Image 1 (tube, rainbow, N blue to C red):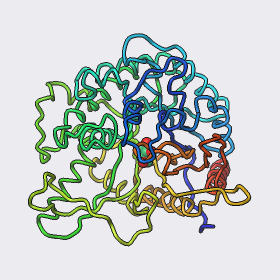
Image 2: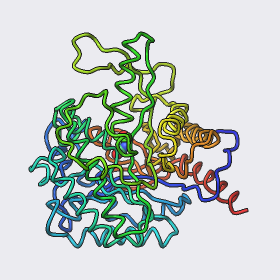
Image 3: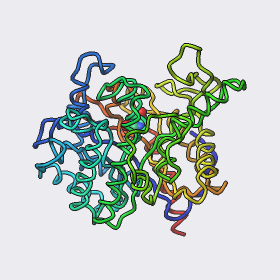
Length: 449
Ligand code: IFM
């Protein structure tokens, strides 16, 4: 087992695990939940690698108490989950499903009863299908519906949720959902998907206002970042790397932190109305950073529709997703955010960090996942090193508590600290769970001294 003793983390550092509603809850047609774009997408032939859906997933809707007990056993101080918009508002707007709000209230109260801070994400990609039928995030109106939904949730839970996260990875939702069509709702607009970026950000800004009016708790957004590694040093390669940097790492963060949209992307910004950028730049208390891997980029072929080409990075171990394991990328990324945004950068929490491996029980029913231990060890050290470099990082959430339904990959990718046997729902903590429990216990003991 690794490794040298983990460097100390300061008192108050938040130790957490993350999940999202559609990936774990199941209960898709139960207690009045409406249909989301992911129900529709997953039920369409050929969309999901193993033909599965999140209809049952980890059945967390019924097993949430068992999952809270697993978190308590792990010793985390926070749990990041997402609220399913169609479970609360089945058609996205209008009539409220009381059962939906009741479920999240039971979850939140159960967490608080175990001393675990509830961290609630309001949108983790499961848009109500009825809103997709009126244009989804291509339609400005969806931003206003999102703010109403935020207001409704905060009216019920605003006194108990300890950190709000408006959107999860709006870049991924825009690019895979509306750009390339690999995710729901399956649109293939490429660069014409820009209105989706703007309307998500507008929804975020409007939701920040609604949340502030109802809740004294801090507010964040969780962005996905990937440090860019230029492949080649020609002028064209450097320009390609800068274009990808602007798209992946700056498109959302620049306007959130008051810089407006990166001009070099040359988007048609006809959808941006006077005052929108001020709404979007509403002060944030925390920046959520989801990090998985760096990206290699070089100049595209002459006939490419894109201003860059993505290239696999050599020389790193790889996860089951074939993503390079590169903790140095996390330290670089945190340093880049710190340098680029300076005083405008709020404290950071790593809202997702994790890896998929094909973990399976051995003959004794134990699940050994040494690669995940090495992954988490490396990434925690990278966070600590960035903090020593001067970056204000106040928490780290592992993706994920449980093996779960991994979007277009279905059940084929396991990210959990806890193994899930999908046919029975049985949970088995992996060796990474025991390892992390020790890390957290040691850190919390140290800070109690
Ligand atoms: O499972 C996803 C999660 O929903 C969003 N961030 C990346 C994870 C792993 O792909």
